[in-house]
Amino acid sequence: MTGRELFNISPVIPVVVLEDVLHAVPLAEALIEGGIGIMEITLRSEAALPSIEAIAGAVPQMHVGAGTAMTAGDLRRVRDAGGRFSFSPGISESLLRCSTQERITFIPGVATASEVMAALNAGFDACKLFPAAAAGGTALLKGFSGPFPAMRFCPTGGIGLADMNDFLRLPNVPCVGGSWVVPKSAVDAGRFDEVTALCREAVDLAVR
Image (tube, rainbow, N blue to C red):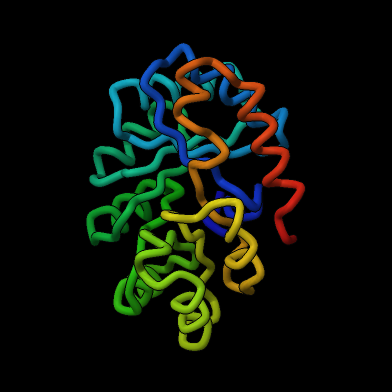
């Protein structure tokens, strides 16, 4: 799967922090019921990789992958757990090289023109803008559209329902990443119906 194909799955990519692997499958099912077939599980807990493996095995229709991939080893571990992609908050030669050599779907994180150029020069046409709000938000993305017309971005960081469409209206933004559709309090308490409702709201309101 290419980065462009990944970005076209859903206008919203949930950014998920899981502390308990038992929540993984119910959460994936709740997202699908809410109309979202992709999820990014951040590698910030010991439950992350087991959760990816559980979802890949039990909910094959969910495109599950990882966030906060920092090293080539992270990319390989996500792939071996059944993850279909990895996002990183940044960009490095080792990550670009590993993903290309081993054909792992990888979305590097960028925040500057130089980083976008590094991604383009390595053959990538899909990047994560992070942290989106702090880096310059829609103004930065509009600026990138001139010199980098082929690049597509998934802005993540500081985005919510209220400003989601400000980003999605931009021609170089097919999707946004956000945690508001998966509140940690709801996940920890097992209130997956709440997650489903938030997903439906986001999908229904998203500009296509």
